[in-house]
Image (cartoon, rainbow, N blue to C red):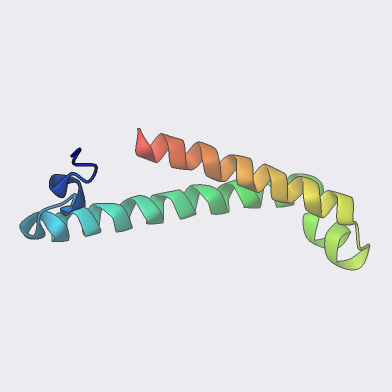
Length: 83
């Protein structure tokens, strides 16, 4: 009979003695990613006056476009952090 489940595949990816290092590195990259994301949102907000258009003028189309841009920026930042 074929062994479809590899017992080694169910083990931890990171050994417990290295877990603290991995968690610290992950938190550092999360902070860096959030900072880049905030800077990108700040630049978009200065260029296009997002708050006025979306909140006061109820511009749904601009909200969708800005959301799409933010998702794209988040994907780029995630890919840059991942390597």
